[in-house]
Image (cartoon, rainbow, N blue to C red; front, side):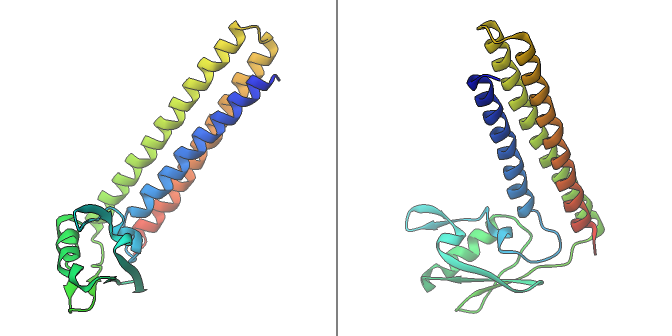
Length: 187
């Protein structure tokens, strides 16, 4: 295979790997019954005029599977962080004791678990759409290389390899989703 063809394969693999990484990050945000600092990833704090992620203005940890502790570096930020968590509509009710925010993570109901699984499936489908998009771009590049003089045998090998990557990464998405669904539905 030519250098250009190998470059197309590298870009294809990297693009599909990025879709997997993004899926894993999105699924970490979905609650599976256990408390996790990642649950607060989407919360942004108005930190002296700049919107900052909660992890940049406070220490967020989980002393046990049922609670999250948010300890701001600046005590004056406690009420602002508390309001931001409430505004994020995550279903949490932080308790402010003047030092830290204590968030008790309520157990998930069966209905809520099903909703979260549905959201996980949507994220997985989005990852597959991204993978197919990368595949389409790679196939277009393979066609362009063929038009520029890439031998037909090499073009066919390149297209086969691109399809192989697509199948491999689609299976990875399914495996990640299966694991997450089991995690969510386990009481």
